[in-house]
Image (cartoon, rainbow, N blue to C red; front, side, top):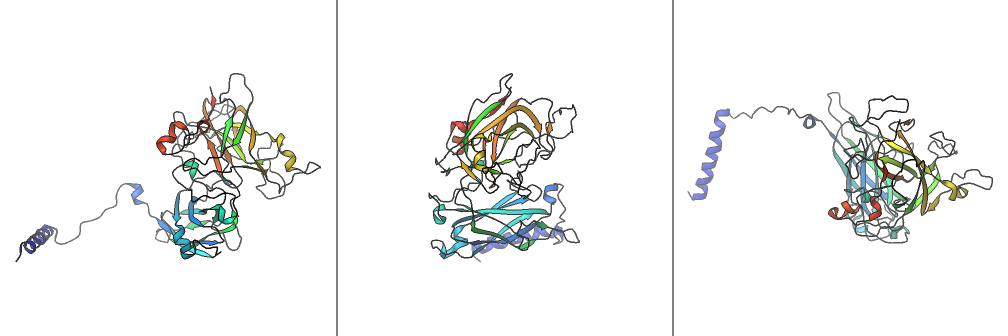
Length: 411
């Protein structure tokens, strides 16, 4: 017997002798006390379907149906997956074929619940008539690179009968086990091409509310950002009347007598001591934390829940309202104005907007730093400050842009 074989038999003998005291029975397995590890999950499987000339990676996001993303809500993705363009288009990647093209996707480890699936083709706008060319620019790790831009193609899981967005439900069996959801199509077509880049902007105006200052006027200027990994070549504000109930009449959700407009502009309080984190959303998931700061309302009451603090603000429509109305002053609901500049008026009045349909005025304006956030009707967003702030950008590998560090300060 050679030395190698002898060593092998010795190892086998050692393993066998180790098992003898156990009677060759496997050890008992007990559930961990870690509740997260006891969570039972299923999966959502489906197919990306593209009809059109767009090319690029397909990015699919998973959202909680109760927390939809902009423009319907402020939810952030629970997860995402990327289908490489080579897998989606195969040999047709470099051709002008319109497909249809299909490729599978999967979200594993999905707990029971109700979900939305949305996404976009991270594409090259030259292929669908854009004025400039760039490759895929989706980088999920930063707010400034995690949304579609001009020339990308939007998509979603749509109910084939109602043609509205489908809610995908992960149910449980009679024994309590989560059931997988299979065969979910997420559809894309050139008709859903994103019309412009995200509404990237910089702020012109003083950043601090001084004592006795009752109104601050800020200019929001669109700002092209072709530097480094940024590919924002032609950002625009798409201004139009808001009609979320589709009754053909401009909405007035806050009942101030003025028609609501897209884009929405929100001036929201940041957490003290944090560069970019919103107050009472320390995990940055778009959902208010269960524990946090609760300010007194104007009537002296408190609801015992963390607040979403925003300042009273709104667009000044003087420069563009004529483009949204006819000769008699009636609203043109189909009019969309692509603008490079907006005027924003901000007052030192604060609200708890936890319930967006009925914001509660606060007794005083909380001191601290406030971010300016623009939400476009396309679902695209931009906010300052962001990761392009010089104090953050260089260590993140992003181009430092001084005016992306702007904050509004309440002393």
